[in-house]
Image (cartoon, rainbow, N blue to C red; front, side, top):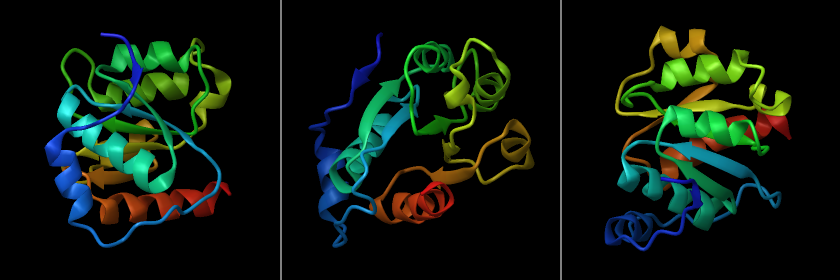
Length: 154
C-alpha cells in the first residue's frame, strides 16, 4: 500500500469530532505530519483531527518501512508513531529515523510522538521520542501534545 494524504469519511471519526466543543487551529503555519499506524482506522482518526482542527497536511504510512521510505524522500514537521506494529515496531522505527543516513537529515531531528494504547515507557525516551498521544485520539489529547511541540519549535 502506498502512502496517501488521508481523507477520512469514516462515521467513527466524524462522531469523535462532533463530540468535542473545541475547534481551533493552534498555528497558522501548515505542518506536514506523518501518521504511522498499521491500523488504518486509528491512523485515519488521528489524520482527520490533525487536518480538520490543526490545519496539518497529513500523509499516512501503514508500516515502519513505509515511513522510512517516505522520510528518505520528503520533508515532514512531525511524526505520530504507532508502537505495536508487525515486522518493525515504532521504537525500532524511531531509532532508525534518528540514526539512518538514508533518512533526510532534516527528518532525523523532527519530533516523533508515540501514538499508542501503551503507557509511556522509558524505551520511548531512549528511542528518541518527544511525546505521547494515547489511543484513541481525541481533539483534547492531540491539542495538549501539539501545544508542547509548537512551543518548542515555533
